[in-house]
Structures are given as C-alpha cells and as structure tokens.
Length: 157
Image (cartoon, rainbow, N blue to C red):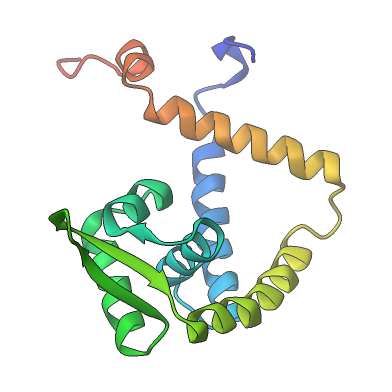
C-alpha cells in the first residue's frame, strides 16, 4: 500500500461517503432481514464459530460487552440461544445457538444473500475483493495507535 498522503486533498469527503454508505448498508440490511444488525452479528458468529463466551463474541464482532448483553438476553428469551456460566470461571458466560437459532440463521442467510446481490450489483468479484481489502486497510489504520500518533494533530494547535 502506498503511504503517499498527497492523494488526499483537504477537501476530500471520503470519510463522509464511508459514513453514508455504512448507514445505508445497515438500514437496507435490517429491512431485508428484519433483524437488528447487532443481533445478526451475534447470530452469524455463533453459527459460524460455534459456542463462544460473551467476551469472545465481543472480541470477534467488535462490539462492547454491554451491546452483546443487550442482544443476547432477548435472543435467549425468544429461544434462539442458550447461556450458561463457565464452571471453571463464573465470570464467563457461554453462549450457543439452539435448534431454533440455527433455523433462524438459515432463513436469514437467504435474505442476507439477496441484500448482498442488491448492494453489490454491477460489481465484479475483483471489485468486491478490492473494496474488502481497502475497507480492511482503513479499519486497520484507524485501530493502529502508532499510526494515530503520527497523523493526529497537536491538540494545542
């Protein structure tokens, strides 16, 4: 990747486009699937990774523990997941999908695929792959504290 920052004039609005795209994606995704994005992320992780602690769910989804708890509790009440304390460490709670949760995932997966076909219409596999790489690079850059120290302006300026 190039480190040439001259390609980004001060009037660049790429950050605004990312924000608008994110908002549009979340809104459209929730309309297609009829599930809140946080609940989907929990469902997706449990289906694809299997039983996990709430702490692991937070780490793998990028959500904070409070968001995980708020998503998991109603999903448990609705019968989509089960929770139990880890015997060796009562501070940890294991979460797993029930048969109803797995069935819900399979129904929603079809809707997710329709959403993706809509969102990515007109793009080829190479373009989708490039977009994924570029967005991952932006995320990595923003998570890097050393890089932030290089670019963040002095607060006294």
